[in-house]
Length: 294
Image 1 (cartoon, rainbow, N blue to C red):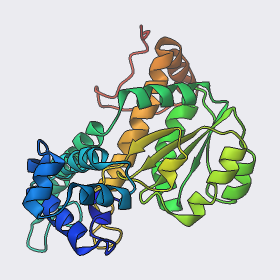
Image 2: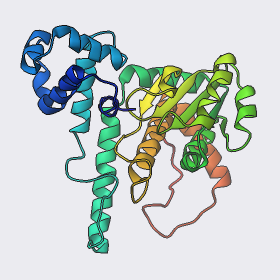
Image 3: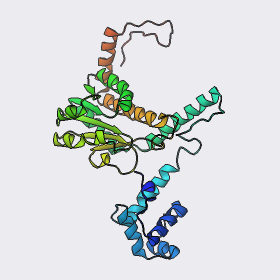
Image 4: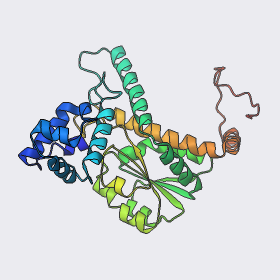
């Protein structure tokens, strides 16, 4: 759940609610203000700010303020000109729709890229590269997006299993040499979260793809990648943005694993493709010239 959503819950006293209202009203302006200044401007006591932070699950006011500011910065970036839930309207012609879908895709990629952490990406690349097997757990609609990732990884000799049925048994067959990719937009999907205890019991490293903010999945993952978080659960035309975000993250993970042994992976992929791919094309762009790829 986003912090800004949690802040809207009915869990605060009137004085605490004054702090919440002030934070939403002032937003970025609270960055350089002290607890004493905020207390004076809200006619509260500095201890009230601490109570608000504690109720929201933070150790203190500074931690709450830093997370709030980071979330504000994220929510204010990239999607100023388009609504991920309704990227086009009933009056748009087909070319306008095409242009708006392209803009949504571009914004989604930029947004997702901004959420990638270098250290996390390095660690995930290592886990995937060293794994004897990679298992992907998610709902079927997300697993359908993962077919291309599996196909790409198989082409460089990696074993990938999309766990579409009997996910509990698939989790039970994991071990420390397996790497689990767990995908959940909310991070709270019960059928997915119920797999976590078994994966932890089997000492299986977990790479999570999920929304920004705290959720159950993030509490147990070894590496966390954030899906662009702009869509409602169902009040939307389609899951365009979240799907594009997941696809991009998987492409990045594949590319990073590929890069770990670039020359051998490229040679292996091309050699196998030459053996099995007998397609022909009259288009010069697609035509293979059979020269070595150094």
